[in-house]
Image (cartoon, rainbow, N blue to C red; front, side, top):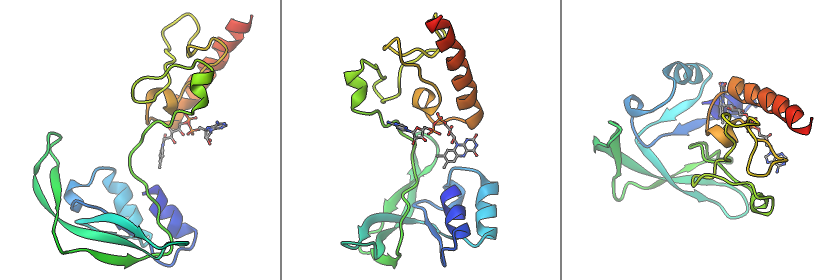
Length: 170
Ligand SMILES: Cc1cc2nc3c(=O)[nH]c(=O)nc-3n(C[C@H](O)[C@H](O)[C@H](O)COP(=O)(O)OP(=O)(O)OC[C@H]3O[C@@H](n4cnc5c(N)ncnc54)[C@H](O)[C@@H]3O)c2cc1C
């Protein structure tokens, strides 16, 4: 929703949000969806993007229409692509905005910074020096430790880590 609305405010002539389920089965804040519509974002449901079209620059997004099957283990109905329903929606910019995953850097290994299997940095609050990583001289907090969270928790962990660094160097 942030990307949609920011694109609108950046004067995009037309902003389309493509989603592979229907509106009822879309996660996220209903209020933000309503606000995005108010700002002029166009929602297209039961549509799954499958390819970005264009060589040097984007010309469109190839999509396939979907129908909803039975609910999955999370209770949301599974989108099933409808064969032969592919078509191309013209676009000159595409923002891929879904999912939250850690992106650990290659240099973590060189500096002995251990991560969990999902790539999040191991830096517990509950230890002698809060938020210290497996490299004693490196501290970490926020989304790279917790996964997707809030600005306030990232700020709080940054402050706690700063206090912890002072203790460590003292
Ligand atoms: C679309 C979206 C909407 C959100 N909306 C909200 C909201 O409404 N309210 C809310 O509370 N939270 C929201 N969040 C979550 C919030 O943005 C995060 O929890 C918060 O920004 C995490 O802060 P952080 O400092 O841990 O990480 P980040 O804010 O991601 O900061 C990490 C920084 O490190 C930089 N970096 C990465 N690698 C290197 C490197 N090798 N060298 C130097 N710099 C590097 C990155 O460029 C980045 O600036 C939202 C998140 C997203 C993605």
